[in-house]
Image 1 (tube, rainbow, N blue to C red):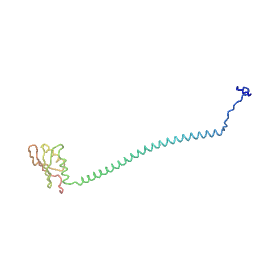
Image 2 (cartoon, rainbow, N blue to C red; image 1 turned 135 degrees about the vertical axis):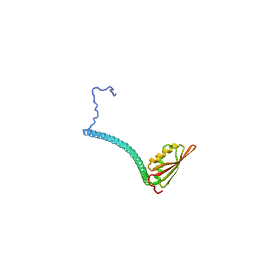
Image 3 (cartoon, rainbow, N blue to C red; image 1 turned 90 degrees about the horizontal axis):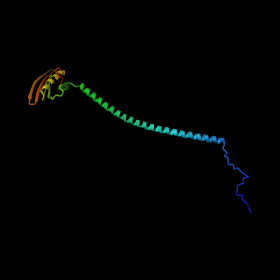
Image 4 (spheres, rainbow, N blue to C red; image 1 turned 30 degrees about the vertical axis):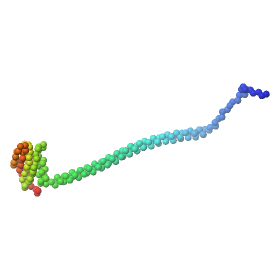
Length: 187
């Protein structure tokens, strides 16, 4: 018969040994250097990515500003072109003004002599030698003396005489004889 003792034998205590890892210090140093290098690479990658994102935002903003400046440059060029056209027109007008003579100066003086806010209509202005005849009509006869004073004040006329005034209902027709202060020029 076989006897089996199911109770633990207390006499022989055996200590179980746990397997020990044989780790060298050099391996730990290499592991630490590797982890430090990986951490540095991760930090460097994160920093570079942030710099790239910031650079991309700056690039986009600068591109928008560049496009706006291009549009402004086109507008400035268009305005410069308009300015040059207007300056050319002004130059031509000034040249024409300087080239005015005789009848043009006479008509300018007559037009400037018409009183402001006066209903005064000129029907003819004729010049023979140094004598100028102005014919017109107005619903208010009291503006005729103002016209005569303005004609004398213009400096173009030395004498302004009222030749005729004809009143009909609501209109007065008038005729003025003027003498030019300057020698008549060719017509």
